[in-house]
Image (cartoon, rainbow, N blue to C red; front, side, top):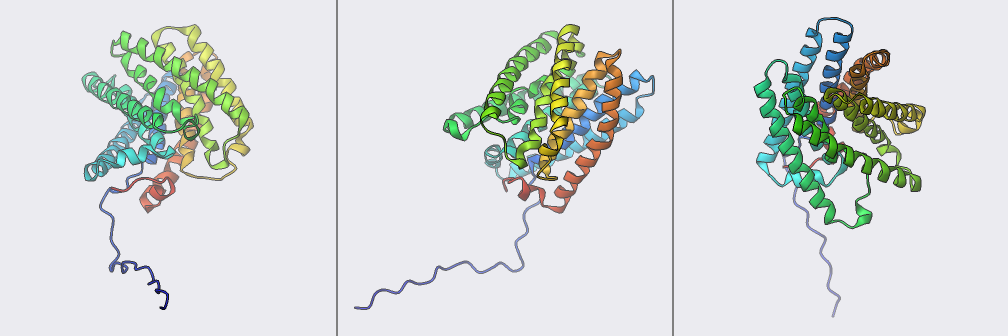
Length: 331
């Protein structure tokens, strides 16, 4: 008897015309980090113009434009979720997705902080919604991590965004008179930030991150900056000074290794450079006095760098390649 011949594997015929993805079906969460950077830049410019006794209209215009970008990106992502709710869980399984969704809720808190002087009621409602969404995100990510073996969930700088990101809410909570909430956010965020800094240092001593992930190291600067600013707003000048000093040490270390950090060239991961730079310039400006000079210098650098990085990432989104580059889920 002749041996049975194996038939070649059948593949479906190619679609013609090619199938077009549904609108917003691959909205990438990676679009949110540069938007958070633009929001942070607007808040920092508001402080910088005040330090120079200049009118704040330009800063408010940038904040308004960044807030509209955030709202549109949020609408696009929610439209993606409406097509298939499971995409959220898929996006949370990859690093760019987790970081992007964390900065999405942080962006809501930043918009709330921007709205406090002009629309406090709307700022309060947005702050509550953003904090609730960020808490849900942190719980979901924690549940996801607990289902993975320890080797599959190494500490990365993006943990700051998930577990410390709520500190952005303190920038709106204190001016709104929510002193207890502001104090609680500071205490919880401080505890989480210290644990992540220590765990990251121990992990870094054992193995260095691959070149494509090195830009994420800049995220370590953002908790120090935000804790310093929140401490200033809450009336704790010594704590604010201590975190500003620690942030300065982190910034110097990052700048000294800039070539090593950017060795892989430009990528969507460069969005991680935007919001820490804006946050630290705002922290120095909030301290006033001699620190304001350093804050103004960093603000000038941020005003050039952040829009440039954001534009390149927006261009990738517009070209339809950002989702593929960041492994975004498709609805």
